[in-house]
Length: 85
Image (cartoon, rainbow, N blue to C red; front, side, top):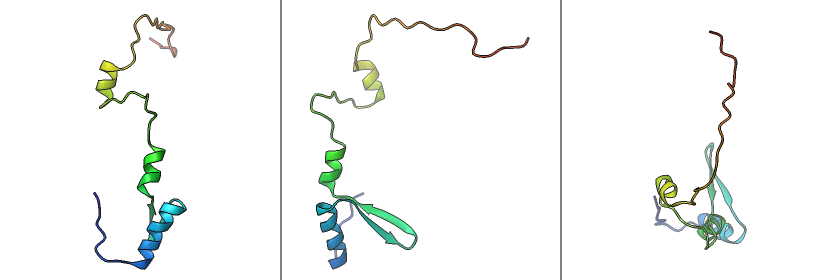
């Protein structure tokens, strides 16, 4: 959800300015703590390199992801524990 600030608050404006200039700012209300992070900083942190393929979801990754043709996987058939019959 996006919140619109309808009333000006000098303190809140300062928090936003400092988040842009200095980095994340912690705000406390009662015993609850919040972190204010400037969006450009957040976007830079979570950006993927341009040559990284993007997938819609895990199913899309499995169907269109890297091919594994020719990859041999051997299963170790030794029991992981002793079973008493």
